[in-house]
Structures are given as structure tokens and as C-alpha cells.
Length: 464
Image (cartoon, rainbow, N blue to C red; front, side, top):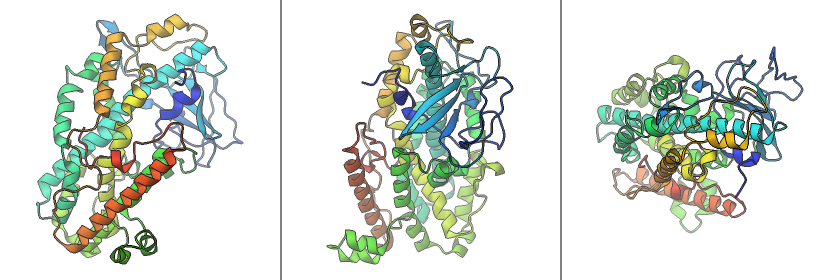
């Protein structure tokens, strides 16, 4: 067991998002050059550029000025922290934390050199902010609710004989059902978030609106997301490593030469490259076909307009003009409801079952000065037993496998009758099996294996 006070453990699940705006106070995760001066006190001046460096920031600005909930008639508290992280020897270590957005008196910058209790309570408020960001934005909004948008739009606009309907419908299984349960049990006026979290109902609604308004197409396309955040070369980033391989397998992966080497005992596979979505889309469409498919564009229009994704700055396509554009969008849809959901869902109990690493609520306000925090005040800040037990139960339940699950690449219903789609699906499954073996081999060398994007643990759809 790693100590709560250990900085390596604390930052192992920090979530990084794409920066917003070129110039602002503590922009989200902008790289800083090593030779630029950084002043962390009054009259703050920050020099952020896009050159690759080893310092970046985790910004929880979406929590700014949100009122805390009341639990058992006792006020709960939220912070909107900024956490400065340092990449060194394969680890991301927090080196400075400011618990609210605006610098000044009453909002000190906590450092590892401060007292153990001051530094610990600062990290605890960051972890509470991460709880809200992770559960409401990255989990609920960016997988469950987006998956619902894709599903409903498909049902409304694509006939069951349409090739994209056949391709996508296995990836919509149970999404609507599980979302109805979430609305009733988790985010309703009498649900979990109202009863056991600091963000409550009104602030949760405000937070989700902010998160939705900042959503971009590139943030949902993993290769673009990694590049924009400057995370290409961070060591030991297994979400990136496994996720990019899975994205490539879904989209367009492999060569004839690779297949020949891999399948020397099955010669007919050497005639095909591993192009699952790209290959299937190009089998049915030319660029002109894409442009002339009214049902396809009705699906996209439904997603943009009914899903609130029609903000031009968000970068979602307004139309499809080429096979490549369509294939990338469909890949994004499938990855969102399979790999991405697995990445943000399956490890919730592993990292959130230990309450101080993922507190749903905090009972005392952020400290306004250094030296005021004690062991007793930290214990008074952490959530009470009832809140802790219910949060542990929720993350345990959500981390469990669905009782009726299909792993990614398993299609029990044969919706395609043509030879080419059937072969592409067979090759897709084999490529995922190769990735599974690769991940399991790597994990044998790790003290803390990363299993959440092992295709064996990734569902075809959002089923839990």
C-alpha cells in the first residue's frame, strides 16, 4: 500500500484536458519552456508556449464559483484548484497547488516544502476536484451522454438496412437503459450526487453546462487529443499507449506484409489489410457517395443540432465530403463508447475505493493561509462515514462487469451478409487479440499493471 502522502500515488490519475485560449491565468496544461521565468506570487506573470517542456498544469476552472451542497444540514465545500506538475524520470509529481483561480491574499500557493499537513490538505482538495471532473465530465458527459446522442440519432435517421446502422448498432447496446438508470439513481433530484457529494444538484447542472460548452471534436479523437495536450512523449502513459493502438485497430491498422508475417498459416488473410472502419466505409462508399447520402447527413445533423454540438468553434464536422472524414468520425463514435468508456469507468474502484484519493465531498473550506492545518483538521475535512461508504459502493458497482457483456470485436448477430465486411470483422477481432497479448506481456513487467484498455476488459458498448 502506498501512503496517501506519497506524491507519486497522488498524481497517478491526474486528468489533463486540452487548453482553452492562448493567454490566460494558468491555462489548461500548456507546456512551458525550461528557460522562461515563472513567478508564483503577487503580480503573477506566466510565460506559456507550445514548445515541449517538462512542466504543465491541471486546471479545474469549470468548478470556479460553484456553491457547495448541504449534507445533513452541514455545508460542504468545493475548490477550483490549479495543480502544477513536473515530469521527471517517468513520473508526474505535483510541485505547486493553488486552491482557487485568482491569486492573492487568502489563496496561498502550497508547495511540497510546506508542512506535511498543509501539502496533504491541498492535494486532497485537488482530488475532490478530480472526482467531479472525472465523474461528471469525462465519464458521464463524454461517454454516457454522448453515446446516447449517437444512439438516438442513429435510431432516428438510419434505416436498419443502412451499412452504418449495421456497423454501429452493436455499439449502442444498453446505452439508453444504463443512462435512464443513471438519471434516476445518480443525477436525479434525489440521487447519489445530491445525497453524497459536495457539488449537489444546482452546481452539478452548471458544471455540466460548462463542460458541454467546452467540448471539442479533437478532444474526442484520441490521436488529436494526445497531440494537442503535448503528451506524446510522457513516459509510462499507458492510457495513451494502449488507447492509440486500439484507435488504430478500429480505424485503419496494419499492412499486407504485417498480416503475412502474423498469419503465415492462414494464407487468405494476406490478401487484406487490417482496415476495419476505414475498409468497411470504403467498401460501401466513394467520396461522391458520401456527399450524396442524405440519410448519412441527416444522422450528422441530428448529432450536431440535438446534441448541442453545433458550435463552430467546437470543430465538429458540418458535413462529410470524403470517405476519410466519415471513417474518422465513425471511429470516434466506436472508440468513445468502447475504449474511452472502459478507460474512465473500469478503474473507478481501484483508484476511488480508497476515499482520500477520490473524496466526493469535503466538510471544511479550503485553507486561506499556511500553517493552519493539523491532522485533526484534515480528518474533519474528509467526508463522513455514510458519505464514504455510499461513494465506495457506487464506484464498486460501476467498476463491475455487466452481467451480459460482449467484449469489443465480438458480434454475435451477423448483420452483414457480404464477404468483405465479414472478413474485416474477423481481422478486427484477431488484431484485438494481438493487442491483448501485447498488453498482458507488458503488464507482467509492471508493479501496477494497466489493464483498463486490454480488449478483453473493453465492452462493445456502454453497458454499465
